[in-house]
Amino acid sequence: MNYRYDNHFNASCNHLPVAYYRQRSRADKYLIKDTFGHLTFASPHNHAEFEIILFTKGSGKVTIGFTDKELAFEEGDLILINPFEFHGGYYDADHPECSHQCLDFSVSVLEHPLTTMAKNLANSLLNQSIRCEHLFSHKEERYEELKQAFFDMYHAVSDDAEDDLLFFGGLFRFFSIVNSCGKIHTTPNSSVKDPNLDFIKQVLNYMEQHYTETIYTRDIAKELAYNKEHFCRLFKSHFATSFTTYLTQFRIEKAKSLLLQESSTKVAELCGFSSQSNFAKSFRAHVGITPAKYRKFVTGD
Image (tube, rainbow, N blue to C red; front, top):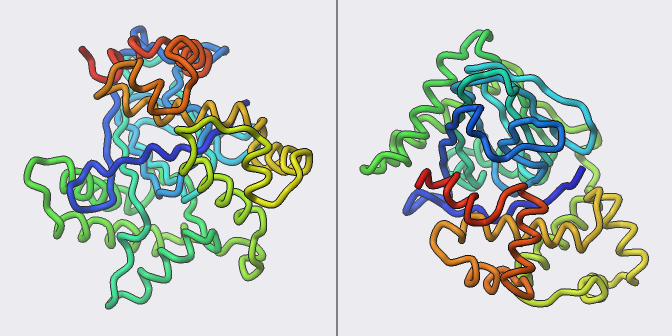
């Protein structure tokens, strides 16, 4: 299984580091499928933002971390993804319609000079000393309150008249409910600084700064003060794939958002591919459809 870092986060709200989207499709029209025929809504990836997904139609499974363990979700369930956690998922193919709504936001939105508890929560989530449980079932107590808090945040940033008060009201209420339900836990050995996280952050920062350029493995190894062989071993142990494969996936994630505004030729250039044909071939290999079909799938045009 291939893993990738998703750093194509673009704030949808004009003045808050918050992105939102909604995905809806008939199962028989779903274009993105894996080798098992699953209706893939997200291939394995991670990002620095906290993510909340509300599944409004359909059921399926999400994978979190590097294991093959799958977490089943049903219609109405909420899935919470902590910063930097690898995750992916797919819908079951026997549902006539699949849809979900999603919010991605920087945990910095929790930081306020008058809210010490929220600021500590933001810092602890970012440095991975605490983690939220991943599943909040539609059958649990306080589910309706949590769902309403999610809707308040979503509508606050997705409606034409953006409403900061509604967003922050929903945000603090959401985490207050999650906390009061006992779904925030301290990570084992959280007092010990994690060198693995430092390595991951260094790699991702380098890729973000240089993905538009021609990058060789020896370049990043030298930049991070490793010999090439040691860097490759470290990278494979942390990302479960080679640096070259991961870099291609990283560029493709950048390309996905750019395809909505730019031509394939321009996107290939902006994302560091050697040619438009190389970009098209790589895109189809990793996503399963051509860039043109992906654009049509996302925009509905």
